[in-house]
Image 1 (cartoon, rainbow, N blue to C red):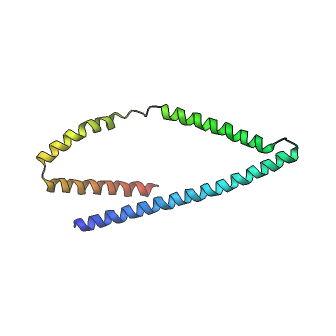
Image 2: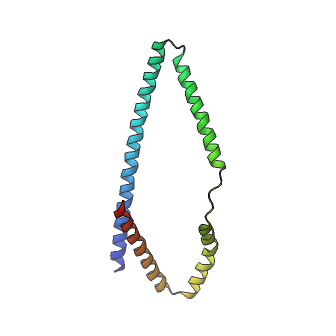
Length: 135
């Protein structure tokens, strides 16, 4: 019985990981296509600037990238300095977790813990399946 449950959970885990990997691969392909499109747009911009008579079109494009990089660095520094939002429930769980685990290890048999883990895994799997059907 336990082997069957673990097999189902294992197959579900493999399927989820496979779908996530496909998603990451699709994002990577889109990023590469956008990179190529961006390079072609830069070449076209340079040609247009040269044809319009701008002096040193490559220098103007490099200056634009420098401004974008400075904005990105400023945004990254601002985001790093921000404090994460407080989550009182998570803080309480971190405080109560170790004493509760010690109490449970003293009072509860290993068989009861195993049944609890199986029930919790079944609950999580059921919620995941129900949640996935709405997407």
